[in-house]
Image 1 (tube, rainbow, N blue to C red):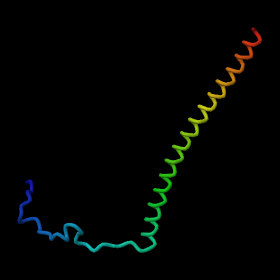
Image 2 (image 1 turned 120 degrees about the vertical axis):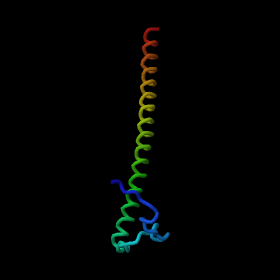
Image 3 (image 1 turned 180 degrees about the horizontal axis):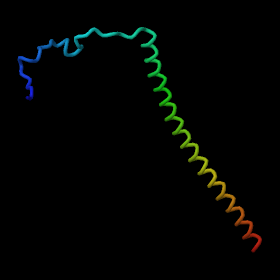
Image 4 (image 1 turned 180 degrees about the vertical axis):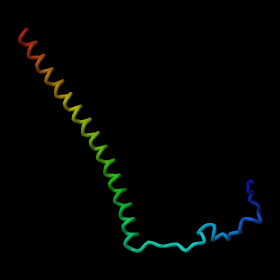
Length: 88
């Protein structure tokens, strides 16, 4: 009892009906369209600013670690040089 579709059973649709449909479209009013567009723009801005914040934080942490290690190295050199002066 399977039904098979044949060329005679399917209605022929025009190109406009295939692309746009046969029912009338309900359009958004100005406020809703502006709200959707504003939401898209603000979410894009927030996304880009979050990426910039992550990159800036990474660079900041890298510099803090390298500066801290550099100061520790200088401090150790100063301590060991003073001990070598005492021992000599």
